Length: 165
Length: 94
Picture 1 (spheres, rainbow over the protein chains, first blue to last red):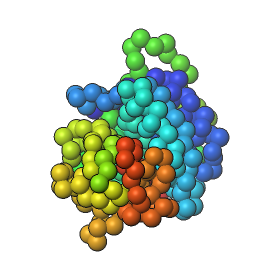
Picture 2: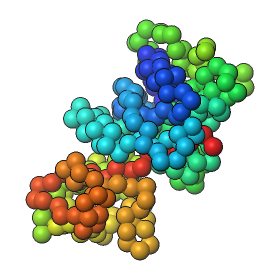
Picture 3: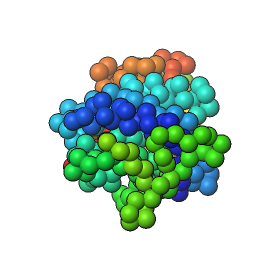
Picture 4: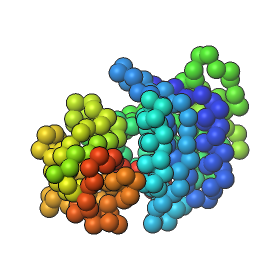
C-alpha cells in the first residue's frame, strides 16, 4: 500500500493544522485509486470540523463539504480517496475513535503532535476487521522536492514525514 | 415511481460491483435505498440499521439537500434527481 502525495500538498495540510490548534483540523484527499492498491493524491482540501463533541480531540468533516468535494472530484474524473486530520496533542497513529469510525478503502493521513513536539505525518488504512495498516508515503518522481519532505523514515524505520515546529 | 441517479462514495463501491453511480427507481429516499439494498444486499447493514432507519454515520443528499432535515427516508425524490450517499467522516485523537 502506498500513498503518493506531493510535498506541497502535505505543506498545505500542515499549515491548516497549525492554524486550527489547539483544535483538530480535518479535510479530504482527492485523487485516484489504482487497482494495485496505490493511491495518488492530486490535492488536499480543507473541510469544516462539524463535530458536536469537544474539538480538541474530535473531528467530523462537514457533510456539505464532503458533498462539494465529491461533486468537484467527479467532474474531473477523480474521487475522494481519503481523509486527513490532526491529533493536536498525540501521535500520528489511529486512536480507538479513529478505528471505530473509519471506512475501509480510504487512506487516513494523520498529522500528529505528540507531547507538543515536532509534527509527524503518517498514513493508514483500516481493514474490514477494524485493524489499521500503515501505508508508505511517497512523492511523485517528477515533482520538485519541497519543504515538507515525504518518504522519510522515523527512528523506528517507519515511513513518516517530520516538519520542524 | 421515479428514477434517480445514486452516487456512491468509494468505501461502498466494493459492495455493488465497483460502480460509482447507479440508476435506481424510488419515489422517496427510503424506496430508493430499498431498491439499492435489494439489488446489493451487502450494503444493507452499512446504510440502514436493524430497524430500517438510516444509520447515524450516513447522510443522504437529494439534489444537494440533506434528507435528515427534510423528512429522512420519507423525503421525496424527484424524477432525474441526483442522490448522494455521504458517509460520516469522523474520528479523533482519543
